[in-house]
Image (cartoon, rainbow, N blue to C red; front, side, top):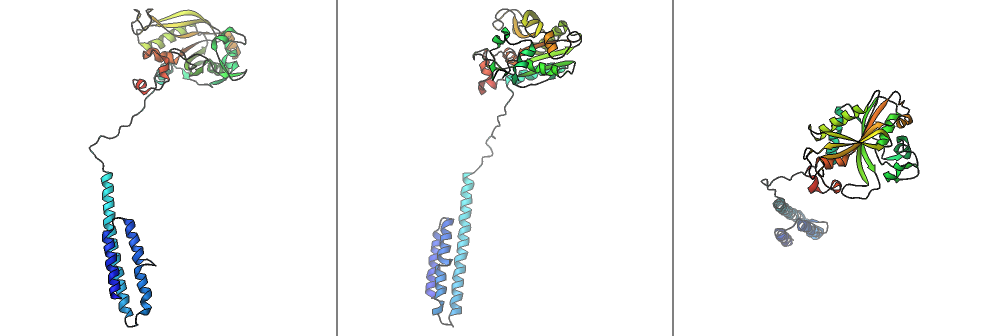
Length: 339
């Protein structure tokens, strides 16, 4: 029995010393110390040992078990340390390497231009008002003095959802909704996305942005409109900017005008940017038509007002000298990071 236990001990220690994986050690533990292991087999054979020898043999079995367990733990500790060292080598961090850079985004040219326009008008006492992009035909046309059958409807190329609902072709409906509330006086701008059935090219898009302004109060005149837009142009394009008003026609304003500003590249001398004219068209405006006021239950004999509208993309194109509107929508990071 003693010789058999010695053989078991030597064989186990030899296997333990040769093991190179923690899984192997677990297999050795089961083979020698498990319920069906070598030492368990020896204990089952104790019934063939005399009563006088059993205590001594039992002690020998316990000593062998203790030696095997001790060596298993020692080898396990060495292998675990080795595994940890190899993992640390694989995951080594070079603290001298530069840190990863976070590429922080920035504002889109349209948003930069919008915030600049809002800053100017809020500074003049205007509030910023928004409205729905899916609009009723009444607010988009009829309440703006454009009844059914009016030629101006053909010029809009509107996206209709049904006979009475459409994608707004201008942000003027926000002005009507504000006037309907009856809280006078009104000083507001209405920025937002609008939709028209245009072909995509360097200066057109089926979806773009407008900023419309409205002032309603007693004794508002065309002179107030001119002064407001002159101040706006100087704030946006520079103190030496000059403004020119040209007669025009809009169904919702009377009288109406288109507004040009002196070229901020050549200061009116004529260049490629202004096509040699020295002037650049930026917006349309006029005095609110009496019919529009009546539709909103405002007495045109007591109140008057002016309105204006400018394309946000047009401001961005002019201010940042961009020659193709499509660049604003392509999300090319090489283009956008310039701003």
